[in-house]
Image (cartoon, rainbow, N blue to C red; front, side, top):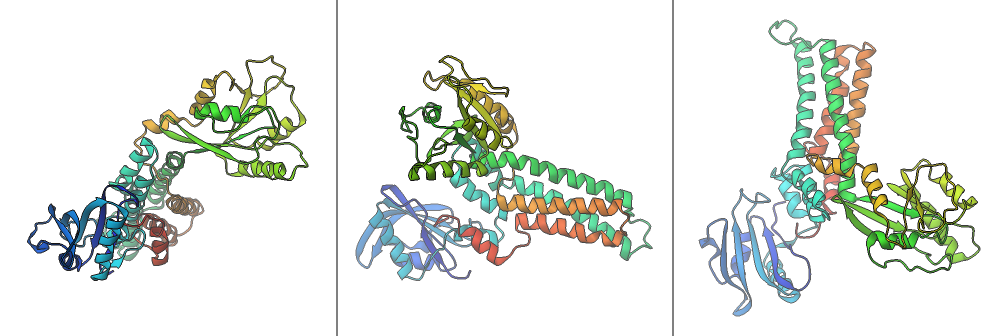
Length: 445
C-alpha cells in the first residue's frame, strides 16, 4: 500500500474529457516530471491549467486537480489530470505516469485504499459500486444512502447494543462487589436480546426490498406455444423485440428486455413455448425455459382465452404453483373458451390492453411501499448472509436464556452477533475476502 498507483477513471472511448487519477506518496513527484508548471506551487483543492509534456513535446492541454492528504478520497495525495477525451491521448498520459514511477492500479484499488486507510467502511465502499451500477432512480437513492453511511449507522447501532450486553455481563462476572454497577439479570439480557433480534429481523425483511431495487424483478414469461408470450413481451417493452408468427415454436431462445415500473426494474425473459417436441433445437429451448423457473422472482404463466385448457397448460400450472406467479389469460379480445378456477389477469397483447397486468405486478411486490420507505436497505448478498448469521446467533441466545443456560455461557452467542455485524461494516475482515470484493470494482475507482 506504500506505492503510488495510477489509472484511467473515465470510460474508454471518445468523449469531451478523460480523467487520469494518481494516488500515493510520490504522486506530486511523478506528475511534476510531466507537467509544464511547478506542481508544488499549487494549493490543495484547486484546478490548474497547463500542459502534459514528454521532454520538449506537448502531449495535451490539461486541467490538473490537486488534493493533499489526508483530506482526500484515499487519504493519500491525489492528483487528477483532466485531458481531452481521446483514447490515444489518455493512454499516453497514463503511460507517462507509469514510466515515471507509478504502478497501474488494480480494479477498485482507489476505493480499497479509502477503506483500509479508514476513510470509509465496507458498506460505504460497496455502495460506491452500487451507485456506479445504479440503473434506476430508486437504486441511486439506495446507493447514496449507503455511500453517506446511513446504513452503516444502523448496523453500528445494533453492534453497540450487543457490546453493551456483553460488557455488562463481564463487569458483573468480574466485579460482583460493586453495587453501583448495573446487574445484568437473566430477564434483562432476555429483554435486550429480544429487542436486538427484532431489529435484525426488521433489517432482513427490508433487504428483500433492497434486492428488488438493486437487481430488479427477474420475470419469466412462460406458456405453451402460440398463447401470445412474444406478443405480450413486445407490448410490455413497447417495441418489437421478439419475432411473432402463427407458427408454433418460433421462439427457440430466450428474448430479454426491461422496463421501469414505479422506479423498479422489471427484467422480462420471454421463453420458448413449452411442449413435447422431437425437434432438437426446440427441445433445448424448452429445457432452458423450464430451468429459468428456479431463479425467477416472478412467473407470468400465459394461457389462451380462445382455447380450452390443455394438458400442457395443466402441467405448467402444477410446475409453477409454488412460485410467485401471475396467471395471464391472453387474447381477451377473442371468444372465451377457457375455464379456469384460479385467480388470473386478462390481457390482450394484440390490442395493447396490459394495464391490469402492470397493476397486478405493482400490487404483488408493493412497489409503491418500497419507494415510499427511507431507502436505507441492505441489498448486498454478502451483507445479507452476515446479517442472517447475526440473527441465527441472536435466536440461539434467546433459546439459551429460555433453557436456563448460565449467564457466563451466553457470551459466546453475543460475541458471534458482534463479529457478524462487525464483518458487515469491515470492523473485522479477511484480507483474501477484501481482495476478492474489490476485484469486482471497475478500474480507476
